[in-house]
Amino acid sequence: DHTPLVLTRLVLDQQGHEHPVSVPVSFGVTYNLHLASVLNESTTLHFLTATQTHQEELYVYSHTFYDVRSSDYAKGVEPCGGTICGSKEHNKNLHVLSNLSRNKGLWLSQASNCCSLHQCNGRSHICQPSSNHYKNEKGTQGCSSKKLSSFSVMSYNIWNFNTYHKDSREYPNRMYALAGLLKQANPDIVSFQEVRFETPLGENLGPSQMKYLISQLHDYQFVYQPAQMQGNSLEQGRTEEGLAIFSKFPIIHHDYLLLFRNQSNSADQNQRVCLHVIIEMPIVGKVHIFNTHLSLSHEAREESVKQILEFMLSCGDEPAILMGDLNATPEEKAIRMLTENTMLLDTWSYLRPEDFGFTFSCIEAELSKRIDYIFLKQTEKVTPENIEVVQDKTK
Image (cartoon, rainbow, N blue to C red; front, side):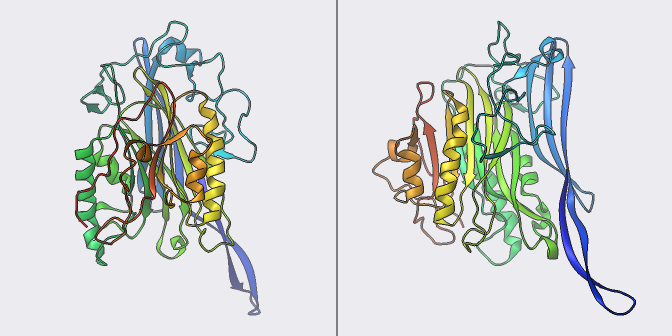
């Protein structure tokens, strides 16, 4: 899909009179690919999103995959989430989009031609090591060969290309430290906010922060969804920012929700989204992960929370986790809306009620606010065990 933009420029005619002319502008092309790799009775389905800049450089934004039986694939049977079927179940005012299909109006529902990777009329998920996949301690990337009694999730705002020092040459050092922290924490699922593609920045690491994250997190499938294109794109080149989710287990579906925005409010100048993936976990089954970065505007945060809560209704009885940078402290209305009269549990308040759990400091020496959260939908399948703020004590 092209990313279209039309500019109005003034041109002179032969008499010297100015006339407005619309000039189309493109910052690049996005390709959505669906590949099937067949090996005996197993078919591995790959879903990739790649973007090409106007300089004809290619960057991978998403790569997810999972196995199905070849006989099922031939019949068009895929896991719910891989195939979108049925009628619309969300409020029509919710704008849910996905790059998994040409059809941008996709809605999840149960249907006879959708099945679980673990069980569907006697069929089971096939998980075999393959040289075509990334390797990790669990065997084939995205597949666990042993029973899983617990898993870990992390939320991380990586602060785009900012650095503590004004000198942008400090940026690579910050990213090296970020990679070290991620490898030390070793989460099974990690949600990132403020992930950027910014043409003139990045020093030797280049303009795509996703490219660097992918290079460091070999054991993961991943999805990146830009939420906004920055105004400086016209002057200095393509600049966009968004959300990403990385998972060591198969991502069988992903989509995103466009959140409320009041363009007349100076605190709400950037489009926000909520990124949603469905992950197939051993024993547990499907787990829904929601990642978001809310507005600086109180109004937008509260309206966005309403949208997200309705968006999460699509999970049904399946486990769900909402995490991200909500730009709001616990006493604010937007946060209270998430926990009052809902099934969502603020895991920090539940597990460590005596601790502040500060997560934010910008460039101050000490953390001073809690604006990052991990909410868990209360079910019997998944219960919280431990939570901590991970730091490396560097700036």
